Amino acid sequence: MGMFDFRRCDGFTGSIPQRFIDTNFPKCPMCGTNNPYWKLKDKMGFVENRMLFRCDQCGCILSASVADFTGFTKSKAAVLTTAGGINALFKKASGKQVRTVYVKVESVGSAQTTKLYEGKEFELEELQKLAESL
Image 1 (cartoon, rainbow, N blue to C red):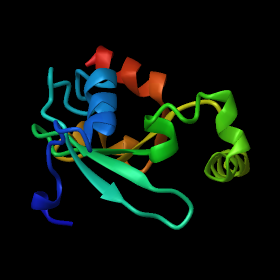
Image 2 (image 1 turned 135 degrees about the horizontal axis):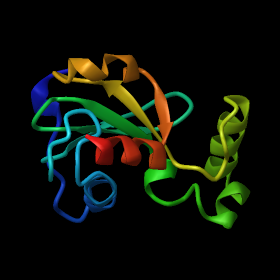
Image 3 (image 1 turned 120 degrees about the vertical axis):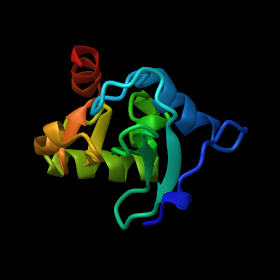
Image 4 (image 1 turned 30 degrees about the horizontal axis):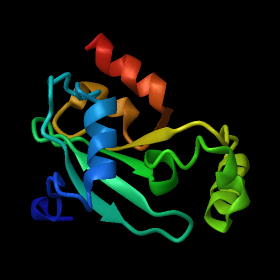
């Protein structure tokens, strides 16, 4: 996974995931940097498509499923669609709340003090509280 695969998406196409990460994480939950310059990259998966978000300061990588960052997860109608149904089944099977947004810490980057968070998935609010505490 090269550094150049990540890009800033200020244009229309990447505006939804870019707005999601910029709005929800004005402070990096791994290094505590204010206004981190988040860059994005798509990650296609078998069960779900995820978007990867990389902090320009520490290089940590967070990810969220497309259903989660588009607000699809929170809508009542989402479960009626095929993608929403699969997302709901996947979450239930993993013991997660269907209507909760989850963010995964793919890599802690240079913030080695947070190494125990690597590979773990958090509820959006949990990770936001962590960022605020730094």
